[in-house]
Length: 581
Ligand SMILES: *[C@@H]1O[C@H](CO)[C@@H](O)[C@H](O)[C@H]1NC(C)=O
Ligand SMILES: *[C@@H]1O[C@H](CO)[C@@H](O)[C@H](O)[C@H]1NC(C)=O
Ligand SMILES: *[C@@H]1O[C@H](CO)[C@@H](O)[C@H](O)[C@H]1NC(C)=O
Ligand SMILES: *[C@@H]1O[C@H](CO)[C@@H](O)[C@H](O)[C@H]1NC(C)=O
Ligand SMILES: CC(=O)N[C@H]1CO[C@H](CO)[C@@H](O)[C@@H]1O
Ligand SMILES: [Cu+2]
Image (tube, rainbow, N blue to C red; front, side, top):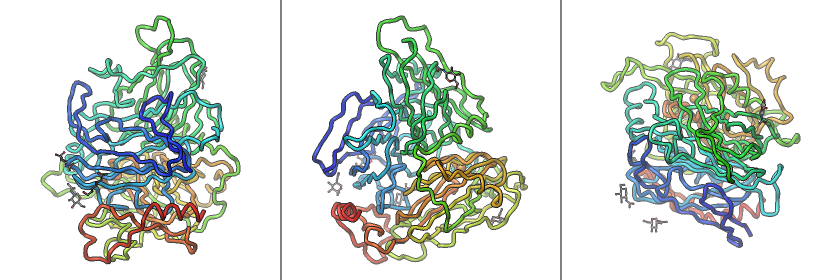
């Protein structure tokens, strides 16, 4: 019997424990609700009217079903970021990759299938830019009667770094697509939905975390910002990083972290400083361009009687463009165990260039004569429009995607230093996937290119986590660099920021059959096409095959002419899955 825990408070001092329930259901109503920040009121797309949305608490290995009911005027999909969804891509929630969007007035019951994830993950909308306000934390506790690999925390504290535009994000998104340039920058960063004391009209609503002296808190940090890596610090307090992306790490003592969009970090905080008020703050890391410089703040308030200072202590930050501080933090993350199951040998090696392209812009709405696009191996990905790739694969429909995604860039050049002329920066277009045989050991080397000066790319893979075995600046050298790989205790992640004009090598075993998106987690880059899809084929044995779809899969309309779907009873199928393992 499985045990599920559900709580919706930000700090968990007591949760509702529900024993003897094999499936726990949540209801997510997607609604427009009015919210005010920076003295500006606007309707915001939310789950259950809350911003950020509800925290989902679960235990390792749990199954949580979520009824998504769309009471908004927009198409929506919900993705369980970092949940591998073994054999069940049907609930992965990526529009036109694993499902058609849930249209206004429709509903869809998704199954969040946890396996070996433990720590912090999050859920967010995947359609358009609605993830800006449609997101929340997933806290995965150890199994009942199992312990943490570190001293037990007194409480879990989800901290979501977010972002606020005074304009409607749908409008910002539409103007961004029409204009062809970078998007309008946001007006504020947020900590748990609030900008904090350094922004206008915000002080009265600043997020406050009461702590008791001598107690230990587990901060579940999530970067839900759209386009920026963030630094996070706490005044006068250091902390210990103990996990990232739903996997534990070797303890890392530090006074700051860098966190990329999509990533999560588990931080142990000891409340051991003189009782007072201290700021926790998130400030941007940016290697160029226009950006918001003001940090988002929350306040750590020790309980007890003392006179707090007129203003809490604000920590000092690395410089905005301090790439050594950003990359240097990430490079220190290591898996907790030494006996990790990283593939020592690989069956397939792919070399993927990550590029921001420029193409001619001829529409009247264009702000310049060229428009920005993005590509992987020079392919700007086009999503299908009237069917999703998963349905097309499952039903053997032709004409939806091609299987020729290139393993290497079409031309080799000086990736990290080359500066092509504007008219040489165009990409090609395609809806191309890479097929993988079941259980293939895969290595992907991501190579940032210097087109337009280069920028970081936080790459995210659905359906898997991967070991980050190596990284460096400049061009990857396939003769020299593999010798320096860490095959002993590389961190297990599902989101890794590839350094500006640098490279990163990841490895994973393709043992989760399905259709899995891989994309940059900078929202503007994914909108420009920096993405691709892996299709991992079924294995021979019954428990190596994809499960059938649920009967309530949202429809686009384009599936009508193809053979009908054979539906399964997902609960029976999942039970069979459990029995097979
Ligand atoms: C979903 O929609 C169907 C058909 O309109 C309806 O019968 C069902 O009650 C809805 N489910 C939820 C959870 O709202
Ligand atoms: C925090 O760590 C920094 C160096 O990482 C050190 O200089 C400082 O003394 C530490 N502060 C506390 C309160 O432990
Ligand atoms: C990318 O593809 C476009 C269109 O086919 C082509 O013009 C361009 O030269 C290619 N660029 C690179 C770097 O391969
Ligand atoms: C919503 O999704 C449906 C199905 O794919 C599509 O036909 C429609 O154009 C979408 N609406 C918008 C506003 O994108
Ligand atoms: C059935 C349903 O929930 N419809 C809603 C769709 O969205 C519009 C606009 O927000 C609402 O007015 C409908 O009630
Ligand atoms: Cu990117």
